[in-house]
Structures are given as C-alpha cells and as structure tokens.
Image 1 (cartoon, one colour):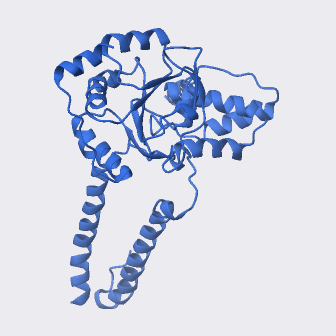
Image 2 (cartoon, each protein chain N blue to C red):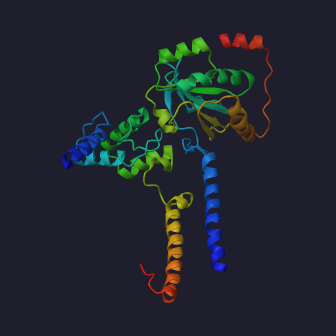
Image 3 (cartoon, each protein chain N blue to C red):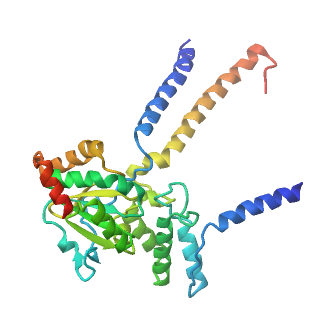
Length: 139
Length: 197
C-alpha cells in the first residue's frame, strides 16, 4: 500500500520534471544552477499559474532561451530578473517587490491575521469571566 | 447588549466588504496584464520589411504621427477574426496601422495579406520574436497606441472588434490627440478598389 502510494507520487512528480523538453549545455555547474533557479522564479505571462520552467507555452520556451543566453553571457540573476520585469512587469516575478502598488498583496494577510487575533483575544478575555458563573464549562 | 450588536453587525459588514472586493475582481480580467511600456518609447529594433527582406526597418521608420502597432501572426487564430476589423478601421480612420508579423513564416504572412487584404501601412517581420519580447507581448493579437512622439500610450490584448474599437481604442486615440477623430467618408466602391491593392 505504502509502496504504491510512493510510486504514484514519484510518477506524478516525474511528469512535472519532464514538462521542459529542451536541455541547454552550460560551461559551469554554477551557470546551470543559476539557470534552473531563474526559470523557477519567473512566471509565465501567458499561462498565469505556472513558472516558465513548468510551462510548455511557446512564450515560455522563448523566455527560457533568453535566460539561457543571458546566463551563458555571464549576466547576474538580478540583471536577468530586471530584464524580464522591464518587459512583463511585476507579474512575471514570483517574488514581487514591496512597493506601494503591491502593499495590499504583501500586507493584507497580516492585516487579516491581526483582525482575527484581536477578535480571538476579545473572545478569550470574555470567557475568563464566564467560568465563574457556569462552573464546569472549561475546554 | 452593545457587544451583541457588534457581533451581529460584524459578519454583515465583512460580507459586504467581500462582495465589493469580488465585484471589482469580476470586472477585472486576470488574463489582461498592464503593459510596462506605457509612456515609454517603442523599443529599438532592426528588422526587415515583410514584403522586402532587403529593406531594414528601425524605430526611425515608424510614422511620425499617432499610429497603432498591431502584433499578429497567421498561426494566431484570433488574428484571423480581427483582420476584417483592421481592414475596416484602416479605411475609415486616418490612423496608420503598423503590423508586427510575430514569429511567422514570411510566405504564410504574405499569402494571408494577399488573400484577405493588407490593412497595414508597413509590416515589420519579427521572425525570431525579439521585438515581441521587448514589447512584452504574451498573447497575439496585441495592439499598442503610439503617440506622435513615439511613446506607447495604451496596450490592448485581444481581438479588436467594433465594440473594443469604440469603447477602448477610439477614446484613447482621441484623448492622446486632443481632438475628436473624424471618420473618413469613403464610398464602398473606393474601399473595394483599395482593398485589392
């Protein structure tokens, strides 16, 4: 049973890994690692919820080729991400910058968390008084 | 009593906020991305003309007046739908349309224009798609409104039909130009003879 489960998961994961067909030759292992890092951090503008590493869209293929070329020419990660951002906007970055137009994106979860925290604290604060009246209603 | 009131009102307020939030989210198509080129010049390029590979176009070759830059390809299904509208607008309005033939075979593109007519004042052959990448193109057809200073003022992703032209493109053109755009009156016969060229 467990073996089957592991096998299934392994098969599913291997499909994911095979999504990218083309392979590029790099001069050094660092360059190859950099290439892999970058294509896993860029979002495919065409397909919305995939990185360009996962996507089979023609555009992703083109973008991977550009990343490959730039990595081979010695560009840094920062330069390559800036190149993409200049063309496709913050959308293309899976790690968008903290700036006013993205404040909602970055801080809304924190705000919701604070509201819930305050609500819970108020509720707990009230419950501390209650047990004296009802006696055994503790968790 | 007061607390009970707050507890009763809170879910309703939360609900209303969510409804407002989702309402706006519904209006906005997540597939439409903002162009990063707005108020920036058209990126530099050096590409040959579709009709004549010997002839090289650069940003200097672009019209010195307001024009539309339309990214298309014969492989792109929606571009076939859009084409008759571009034919019509090119005949009815004094706005040149520059075509960027994106990642296409020159032979297919030429045949397409010969069969269905050519709405473009010039067609740039972007065979390897670099201009498309520099323009931030992610889904053809895409249309850019470029002002007389060569700056991009608006980008529309998708097919431009009558509705999009009247509600999105025309208002932008008129706003950029600062005066209403007169429709050029031509009779059908003249249009036909132009379409044959």
